[in-house]
Length: 545
Image (cartoon, rainbow, N blue to C red):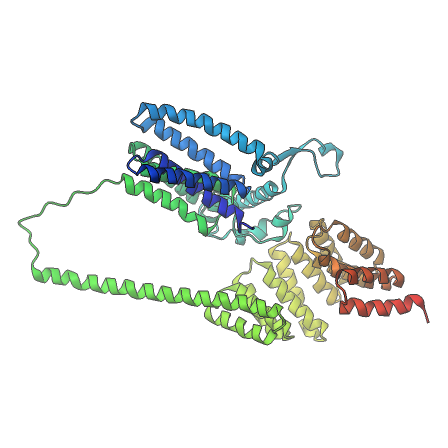
């Protein structure tokens, strides 16, 4: 049974676990049964967090425990409870040690940094190495730091980490950093810093520290302390985890609880006998209030209708993808058009419409849709790459007038995201199709160097095609065999690499070897029409007349 998004689930469980535990243990005004149920619920949530194997949850629990112990030690009226808190701290540390020693979460925590190396260099054999997931996080933090350096005051804007990511994507990063376009910096520090700059970081830190200080100065308020513990847990767990709308509200809920429970009620102003409002004056005030209330209602209804349109557009775009993959291009086009009509400012919907047009062999319409998507999200090279490939399809269909546009779109993708293998492979293909092989080879060689694990198998197919067109058969054969050997995904992912390898082998005068590769393809995908046709063709060449 899956856990959906384990990092977000772990963050949610950690924060709520801490809140229910503090409330159940400290709020003596609650019935004893309710308090016991809250404590049992917190234990269940702790078990759920451990099952996600998300290491950041331990940071959240640890920081929240420190905050609660400080609050109890300095502000709790009972000396016995203060001493009990110290004992509980020792017991908690022992429980943490047990978790680290005897659970998969502990094993994962201990493997974060290890001695040894996957490098081929003997000099790095005993150097500390980060586990792959931690290395991914570190890559995102470096990108976020570079974004803050570029725009240190106000940042790139809310939720705009994906805008700066392509520009600062490093060479030699893990595949998730190298090829993806994530919207989260995997840490609230990196996320707030890249989005809002130094001023945003200061403001966020001020809110956090302010809530904790207010909870401390207000004295013994169990509910306020619950909010403070939730804030601390969120800050701790969010230090190294994915930022998500589904969990960020927990931080502000905790701050709101602290503010609400520690706020002092303002006294009613004393009546002024010498200044009485007449009924006509009250009527004058009532009119603007009614207008304001009605205006708010109208705006609310308009916003609700906007959300309905957005939901309908999202469903239509998803439907376009599903029915396109099911082989229904006409229906996919209709669904894509509906999505773009309901929400014309979403680049993914235009991209889905373009893919539907391409599946119906309407490449010019597809190119127009891809161009619209690329204009709306110029930082996302998926759309400029799709645009370039649509133009490439038109060139391959015999319309050479699109050659310059294919090269321009591919060059734009590389300029936007220079260390993305997909962008480089698209440029290589565009240059090869338009007859500029001298430009295609360097691009595909860099793309392959950036993807040594053959994660992007389509890119290796392009590399084989470029090498075959250049007459470099031995390099194409060696590259294809290496990609098949190192690819860690399902064997079906390598089918296109093997088919293209068969073509290269046949071009190199090795039809018998080509037949062997096609036999391997048919073992993976029986009755594949392309492999079957090529096998019959090459088999007749290998056996002779």
